[in-house]
Length: 373
Image (tube, rainbow, N blue to C red; front, side, top):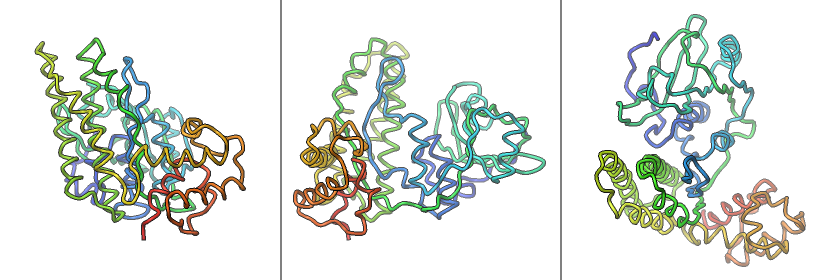
């Protein structure tokens, strides 16, 4: 592969907080800031989440499915103009020729510019821009790995030297622009998650996965804090200390893994410390003027349930409220009125649009920021 000497991180990504992003988010961030200006990409952290889903080796994971991450491009003011699954070289060149820049997913194992090259298989993103004689690659990913540091960089290479592409997307500015997303919390229970890691019989496998989990959790908390600061709701000294706790926990988990790999005893306090830090998120990142995490979500769900006649559990599972029996425009009006009464506030009439009132998450965001000037 022919490359240029990579410039420093600031030269490649003057606005993107690459150290806060995973390998799918990082290059979406570049496109968002190119389209709408510095800091737009921080909207990737608007909602602080803890919603584990089933993962490999019977271990739950907080890593969102790729489809879910890509479905969130609207938060960045981006829209999908074209999509190619496993395109050959000619198709990729033609897509880049038409749109200028293409967002690409491929196997990090096949990317010579990454420390993962020839060592670890995982989906990884990069951007490729069209030039007649070469492909201009931008990869914003930044992370320390056991094999060295992945740093944001730009390089040129022949089109035939790019790794096999699993997915190529042409992403363009959305007609509606960047939505005004407020900070929100979506924090589920941790008991089952912690028990799965505590009880897993293969301790090396459990700690390998938990090392990735704590890394993802730490980064997502930092990203959320950065978004809140941009939004005008900084987390303060308590939040800064919580972020340091997450960093210490991620390091602690990696050290535990290395000890167990060498046949030494596993530290017994690790999962207890993880439980404590997860619990502290609810207090530290609580939104002003309202309950934190599940408290607000449950409150909104109960109000919706009281209006529609459904069980609160059904509302919590549904997400899309239009699928609930009895949900119609008359019920929407009643839900808004009951929420205002219950929360002791009045929503901004400019926010009372159908797109803000038909999904539980959107209603929660509306309720979470009701007191914002």
